[in-house]
Image 1 (cartoon, rainbow, N blue to C red):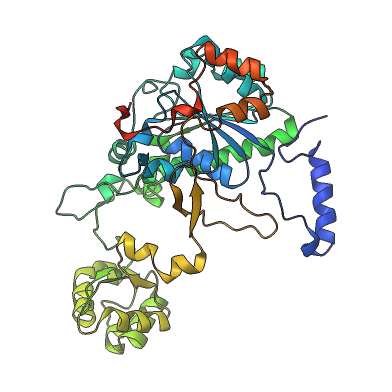
Image 2: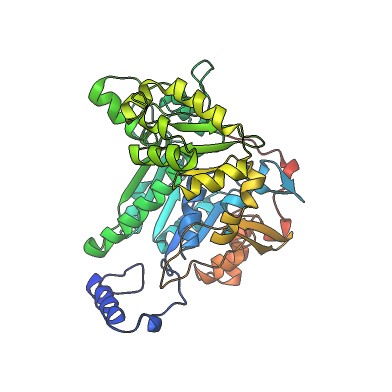
Length: 443
């Protein structure tokens, strides 16, 4: 009889239960448990790509046990700080239980092995070879726990000539060609501000983990999942990667416009800027006739088709800028949206986070924190009709849940916990949160 991550013995049983639920009034479906309730994830990851992936799974209801060294995830040391807690760490580690283990000690490794034995999923993003040196590599852990889904996130893959290279978001933006397409043609390539490759890799990893769990329904076995930062950066080129392979054409920076459609871009108005996208002829006609009241431009042979607009894009954008500058932003946003032209205000982060769109979607909330009182939290943009997401729990203070996890998840007695502590497996939670002054470095 197979175990399943959702508490059913077989996939058929799960399907049968689903059929019963679908045949009755949807209001009778159980709503109290998140979709991944019952899954246990041993999270050995740090910085962004691994922790964000496990945070997504935690938001979906999995029990994520974040294992940190006794010094803590070095991401805790990234500013800005609120009373000693790093805001970037708080952002990427909610809905996790915090455990400290000294994996350099035999006692710490023994506890880690016990944790993996109980886990459905293991996630790690150490440099290649580190997990093997700790005795926590895929071959050993899959033998210990055949149902384990083992997700390894690397910079360039775990095999081959680049396996031991260190890699970071900004570096793979440069190497993948992504940076070559960002910025203006007469300026140097520019990296994207947020860590988009880390975030994309995290979401791909969370997707792949759930696919492997679904496969486990059929096979009863776990498997190894690998995701690389560089591979994700190549994916983030969008259709430009295949465009080059199919045509040999190398895409170049286009600033705020686009090389495949026009008009797309940033425009100053009488007070504040806006951004619009006209990706087809129908939208362009609405822009010219309804918003601008310029049917002559809509019918002009240089602008009547997308191919012609791309060819004559500099002249078209200059004409449009003259029109936009005559009225303020709000005037144009009302006219553009009434005409069905995709458009929006160009905002700062502060303006975006206090916008009506953010408020309407309910993306921001306040949650409690054990030492800070309350902190802001930005929720996943996901809703499910019949199962809730997990209620947000603030990122753990370093080691705060070590005793609880060893007791409740691993079944350790008080004496065994005391013995493990005496043997150097971990530090006591009372030592407190990771402080900015601890000197942790990025490695």
